Every structure is written in C-alpha cells, then in structure tokens.
Amino acid sequence: MTQPFIMQMRPLFGDEEKRAICEYMDEDGFITEFKRTEQFELMIAEYTGARHCIVVNNGTISLTLAALAAGVQAGDEVIVPNYTMIATPNSVKMFGAIPVFVDVEPETLCLDFAKVKQAITSKTRAIMLVSANGRYPSVGIGAFEQLAREHNLVLIEDSAQSLGSFYPDGRHVGRAGVIGSFSFSAPKIISTGQGGALITDNDALAAKLRRLKDFGRSGGGNDIHGTIGYNFKFTELQAVIGIEQMKKLPVRVERKKEIWRRYATNLEGLAEVRLFDHDLKRTTPWFIDALVEQREALIDYLKSANIGTRVMYPPINMQQAYKVPGDHPTSQRIGMHGLWLPSAVQLTDEEIDRICATIREFYKA
Image (spheres, rainbow, N blue to C red):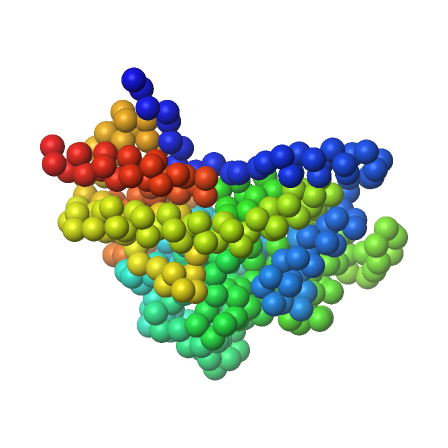
C-alpha cells in the first residue's frame, strides 16, 4: 500500500480561521486594513514585548521599509549574510543600496562576527542580521549591538524565521535592532498567506514606518502628504486570519521543539546526517535543517517514498541574479549539503518516525 505524501512544509489553517473570515464578511467591512489589523498588530507587539508593531503586505517590503526608515539611502552599503533567503539583499537592492555579502557561522548560520568587522567600510550604513531558523549568533547579540554603536551603523534584524524565539537576555529576537522584521508567508510558523511585520521601541521610527507604508499620509484616510510614501498596506482578511493564527502560536512553538527533538533522537548516531543544533529553551526551529551526504540521491530516495524535502538556500553571491566574487566556505557548503526535512507543525510522531526510518534505509543501502 502506498504511503501518503508528506510535504516538506505546508501552512495550517482550521475551522477557527474559516469562521472568523465568515463573521467578518457578515459585518460588511471594507476589507482594507482597519480595526482587525490594529488588533493583530497589538497581539504581535504584546507577544514580542515591542512598543510598536506595524504590519505590511509582505516580509520583503518590511525589510525595505525598515532600511528606508532607518536612513539607508541609495549607494549605501548594507552587510547581509551570504546564506539567507534572497529577499534579504533584494530588499535594499530595490532602492539602490548595495548588499555586501558576508559568510555565516558554521554552527548557527548567523553572520560571522569577525567577518562582519572586516567588511565594514566608510560606505557601510547598516548591518542586516538574519536569525537563521530562530538561532542567534554564537558571540551573542550584544556584540553586534556594540559594533553598530562603535561604527554608527544601523542594526536591522531580519527575523522572518524567528517568531517564538528569544535571546538569552529574555528579549524576543527582533528587539535588539532598531527595527525587527517578521514574515507571515505560507511556510512560517504562523501565516496570513503573505504579510510582514515590523517591531520597534522607537516612537519616531514607528511613525515614519506608518507613513512610508501609506503614501506618506499625515493621517489615516486623508490626502495630505508631508513626505514621500508608498502603498504597502495590509488587509482585514489577512488580519482576521492572523489573529486566529496568533492564538495558536504558543502551542505551535512547543510542537516545533518536540518535532526537532524527535528527529534528533531518531537520527542520533547517523554520521551522514547532522542536524543543526538549537537552544530549545529559548529558540524555536522553523524548519528542520541538516547537512547531509549524497544529498541529491537522498532527495530522490525520499521522494520515491512519498516524502518531500527542500534544498537549503544556495550562496547568494554565486546566484545568477548577483554574481559577486567572494570566498564564503560555510554558505558554499550549505549550498552543496544543506537540506530541509519535513517541518510542518502538523507532522505526527508516526510521520517523523517514518521519515527517519527511510533516511536510515537509504544510508544502509
């Protein structure tokens, strides 16, 4: 009998989201962002401990607006990891800033602190720190905060994969930078289909972000524009779904950690597969990420057993879109051996056991 297909990742929406959407539509609302959006923002702000939360239409534009609000301009250099989703550099490339690629730590896949220091030039304006899969740099976030102060740089946190992860000092990931950015795209721990959020404790930056996302308006619904702005607003339908998703976040955080532990137990001692470590007391794995031998053959073997996987991000400097010279051994290694195993929050223990047994079968052969 053929086993059902296990997707590498899929969002989880339930009856709660369906009912909430139907109830909203019965209210004859305008659908554009309003009270539900405010409620969703408040829930994120309260969960992360931030003073302000501003939601936008996706998690790439959120990074763009963060950089613009923080004063990054065309021609400025922005240090970004060479291992990340390409949205990170694209977000500043969009308005003419220059992404400078720096390699990541082998253990955390976060920016390598020593290499960041070497990459700073007179043109550097910002560091965009990506908390890869919820992890924080081994040197600690304080080292990056101090470096930014010493060089008068803006520290922006790309925390797209990190809702539900915290630093050892108790701050939610995204709170250390002047602005932190989250994503609600389909694979994330909570999803609104597309969507992004910005958190900050700075009143002036929050006001600037709200103007930037709404045509530069001086106030809601008017046509008075004191500054240049754009249209990156949210919708009430997304917010309605987001509110229900946020209610489920604490349970999902715990389940993600349980999933990682079960993978780790089942794959223990298998030399050909190395899961990246997690500080499960503080951080929440978004995906189950691993270095594997014979990656392409393993992918095919798992696919033949109705198990999906996804290749981890290749080194950005080597992608056709950028083609920037540079030697980045860690991100290059990820490009050759990195693999995301099935990671959906709705994975059952039995499915994880099946996945791990199939992986072990492959390496025995």
